[in-house]
Image 1 (cartoon, rainbow, N blue to C red):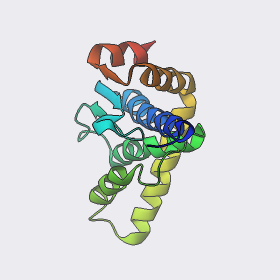
Image 2: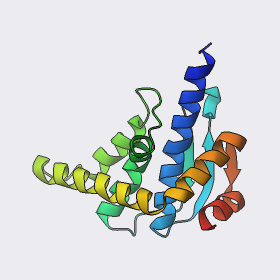
Image 3: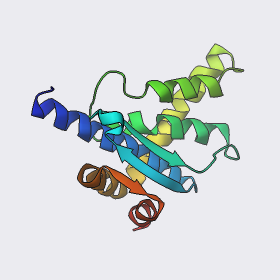
Length: 149
């Protein structure tokens, strides 16, 4: 069992990570239907279910992928080393037909786009992360309320 401080750090990191995805999704006009941390009994894990983003420009789709890691960085909320592994894989999948130079530029631009949106909606990120720490799981109605207020 992890020491309480590590558990708290992992939960806080997961809350900010998932809040980052949710807030950027909402800022891009996507509906968020579920937010959860502590999935599968792991303190540092989480998930956000978002409306299909295939209609968005590639840069926005990439920004949504990296929003969790950017939120952890911006709001000083680290968690375990494997956080964001699936997000990185999603980025690589989106960039599979791009050459290395173009892919690198798009990744850098996506991180900046996500960071800009997170800072623009900073109060909402904090509110969502705090709610996730309190309740661990929220459905569409609670997500909509938190992301709209």
